[in-house]
Length: 348
Ligand SMILES: Nc1ncnc2c1ncn2[C@@H]1O[C@H](COP(=O)(O)OP(=O)(O)OP(=O)(O)O)[C@@H](O)[C@H]1O
Image (cartoon, rainbow, N blue to C red; front, side, top):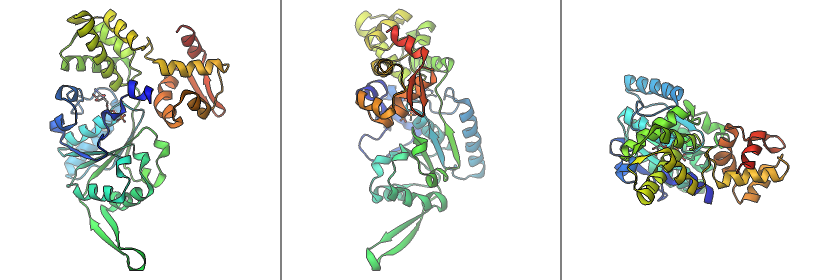
């Protein structure tokens, strides 16, 4: 789907081969990307910019687990895409000095996928499951005793001759990530000892992330230029890094400038139709659609059908930022365009 693949590259952190991958946080080269791009991911809690309350909570739990020489309690991280959930799982593994196995719920469709993964885990290791709200019922049922009692209950054979065998597992930590916490079944949700929400980043933190990434990409940038990228990245580090790379492309090809200034940022982001609030063509189409319906209310399903998008994607990927900046409101009768949203659309 055009909007998500272009503006929010979700595949960055997912397992493209449909299997899990074992990541030693010390060697992020394994993380399927060239080393320079990988190095953009912060590796320790200290390097992780922003999300201070969440970091404090996790830092205390990590220290306590290390002190008691125990596995960290299971962690559920939720929030819009690209805010650092996968990165945080790798940071936790690094802080705990263990490896992290990364997978996503759609890759765990068959019971044997999850059995294989769980039996492969070593003591205190992290298992990161992205999109955890998409686990099948059978996968969830296998997970319950694994999470609570570190035990796998396997049924061998069929019908009256079937037997249940219990296999002991090492104590491990499940880190689940989701953009849709409400879609997680409550028995699964209840098994996470630590639940933390990722919110959009503020301008100061985003500018720091842009400057840090620019350093890793060996780009010289004046402060106004990094601030401009921070303003246009929808409060999302992944988008900040993506915009920075597009600006770098533009600087290399179009003007061969060594120092990136605000004009260069402006020109290159214009080319990608990213406006001064960070909205792209898809956001503007959504707002225009609402405007053409007298500002709403318009139901989510109607909006999704008109835009050719999944309602769940609209709700969990596109809308959160528009709600955050006050361009959109959710009401029981549907979505409403605010005055600010209306004014923005009139100027574009
Ligand atoms: N706090 C941060 N400081 C610096 N860079 C960050 C931070 N959080 C995320 N990033 C950058 O943003 C990119 C996206 O982060 P990440 O893949 O962890 O997001 P996510 O929340 O797991 O998204 P998704 O759920 O879509 O996979 C990372 O490659 C990383 O470089």
